[in-house]
Length: 237
Ligand code: 6PG
Image (cartoon, helix red, strand yellow):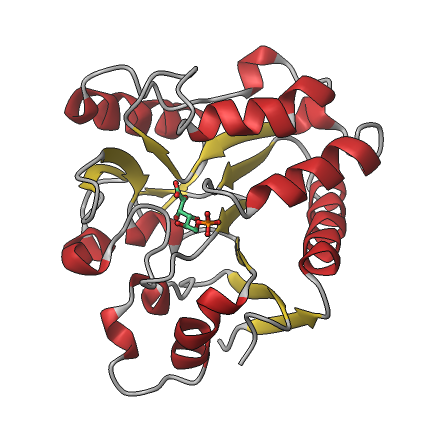
């Protein structure tokens, strides 16, 4: 199925549309809603909008938050995706602590990848042997990576594991990441990508240009779920 591409004049409008879609998806789901968040800087605007405009509109008690990837640093570290989410979102919403499933970045990466996978499998329903997220939110790096699946390690797209240890190709920083098959098992996968620095790769991926399969984000194609891209005009083809 082809992705549904939403393009907005500004990153604020793109994030606002994403927030509204998320609110509607959560409302439509009976029972728990398992949402995996992306990290980096793009989500900060989305999280701010959720904190300001959806504090009471979203029934956060039914939402379980997971991370699509996490840097292997302590939770108070400035590069921690959990810390960023706490500062921009968690401090502002009333969500049970038991619904927040952070990756323990302070622990040994290989052991944490196993532990996180087990925690995911305990909480999520599965299909064809894979845990099924209700929604996985993804960003995309300027090199076309997504989650922490980088171009130099495309094998993570076919890993038999739900979670794996990845290494940032420039910094050498270790990460724990969801892998390609579990991402593609989700009911909804939504990219939120903004800024001119992403335009070239977005264009290559959405245009299915020659060579675009070198970019991990080009391999995100849900088996049965829906794929959406939320873009601002700066990042759009
Ligand atoms: C991370 C992310 C990563 C991110 C992209 C885009 O931990 O860094 O999950 O996949 O989404 O690198 O990052 P920006 O939003 O900062 O451009």
